[in-house]
Length: 204
Image (cartoon, rainbow, N blue to C red; front, side, top):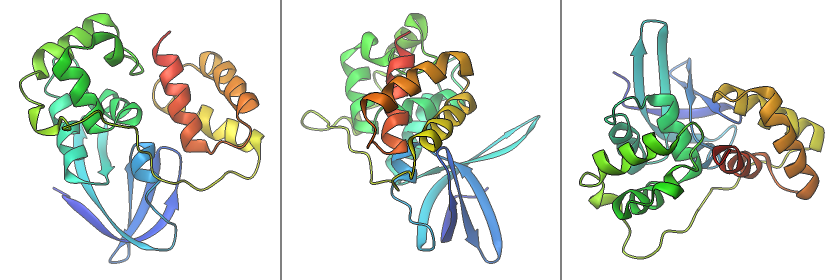
């Protein structure tokens, strides 16, 4: 079991990064907030969770233990797997998500891509008594880390669409949303656009 990685950041993508530890490059999937804290060429530590399935082994990375713990708690919900748990943490910080769960805000939970009304109700019901430690004292504010600015809107569009397809969306559904967001916010970075696209697509 790989509990954490500490080494040089080799690559940063929209949905993954690679960190080299003792000569071995470890590729892991992560939410935009976690990826935004990484800097290529610098040494960094990320907490990890290794998911083993019949079709392979996938490593997930997190900026702190609270986010990883929320990732694990989400997967205790019936029918909710690691991909959907990561999508949830791409839209909300652990404190925000916990507040919505604790208050039974099903509508807010439904903004997570791939989460319908029944799944949102199940999340609120099954996790209500398990997220108290994550709920902040005041209203949580979305706090995404800085990300590297893209050098062209066309490149940004392609990167965001690719990331959305990787999260399970159809390209024909994702591309119009991304193109509209890029047109409205031409100076927005890729990670911010991905969060906005996830929020919009989650409402459809």
